[in-house]
Image 1 (cartoon, each protein chain N blue to C red):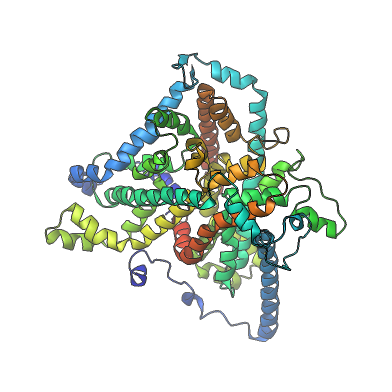
Image 2: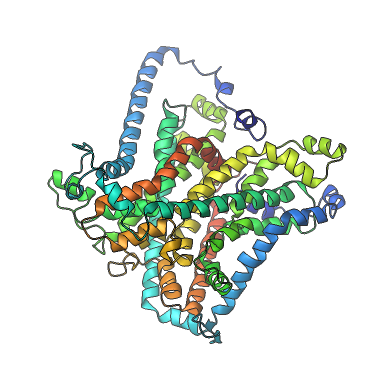
Length: 310
Length: 314
């Protein structure tokens, strides 16, 4: 898989080389220059460390606080721990109608369905837009780009009516079926961009060998667009795992709660004394996203840089 | 090219189809529509159909139980006299007009500091990027609720230097500010787009400027900013569209009611209350279309204004 990275669309060639020769000409002041450059570098690092520290501190503090006795959360702004208090986690895990694992499984089901849906439907649409000629292509492509910017709220009321009439409220279908129908147009666009970077000669060669479009798509294009599929998988994971609005509207039965709505129920029910367990479950809910971030960062950053998605 | 870049070139280039395109036209129709089928069904059933339906519903009185009753422009007239709606507009506009420029400003500033092969760049980039992945979650909204509470982390830190902070989220004057700060906190993703944009600027421009004796500041104003303007524009359009739809943070921090005294009652929150709290679906649909028009107007203004400040190097 790592080899595939370098094949198509790897256009971000490092532009560092093409500007070296006419540079170091200020020989009399070069000593002073390098010293001021070093000071500048130090200042930069200082700024970055301070800003980064302030940004990350609340997260670290939440992790530490989740391991503290409750009363300390409102008294202790520091990060040192005197003892590990695991009771917040055990209390939080069983604070709601179901153990917290139940909600995580619900979330996992929705996430898996959404990932599968996005991978299949978006890659198919992207293949058509990137490689096939058909009437209405330009208009459809324009519409597809516009739907990226369409506010969700404009369609939510009738969508809710539609799904409630077919009895899908309190099922996962309203959250998964739209993904099976490529409504996350972001990913269609991301994949179109990627397929455009794959040399057309490869398709031509396959066509000469007698392959039709399904075959070219499955055997030539899909294997080459693994990086784009990985980016889609990771973003779908994070967005679906965090999705609150959809779940809030469609899932009202505690049996069906996903993690975000379960956490919300927890906030609403909690008394002033259970912040520790609330924090603990918040950490648990962030953990999968953090892990994905840790291992999938490369794809995330490339994905944002090429399409500008959130 | 970005989605927005692509859209604007599509509208700029209105010439007739090239010969090649004409000849190829219709060749793969069948295969193409098979590949597009899921997307087409989604477009009709999940996007355009519901859009038209909500347009119709916005002229009706509908509570899910009785069939919709045509009321003409009543819902829109009601919106004119709805003081809470006006307030929600003010809250949302404040959030967008303060939050977006602030977030993009910080993103650009940090991107500029990070650029130019700084040591440890991947590490810093990760640190700054992480919050934008977590920022949309309920968990972080919960954290925010504690941090900016009366005895929360911020006030604990302030107390150490002898300042008694207000109850940030329980005070109507500061509650919205706390949520705006959460938005600024997620500057990581536009920052990464800025970083990618900065890489695209040819080094020779700076070298030529240096030879001519341009200062760092002059280089920023005359090279970096114009060359980066398409990316700034792109970020601006996307962030404005996204911020108008912001919901989760205000909902969780205010406990779902947009309080204290409606100071965090976002337009989307009010829409949710009308539609899914009171099942006033007609009114909620009218509000949704109003939101679409607002976002459309803002985006149009953005595109028109872009002619005066966005520089395309082509």
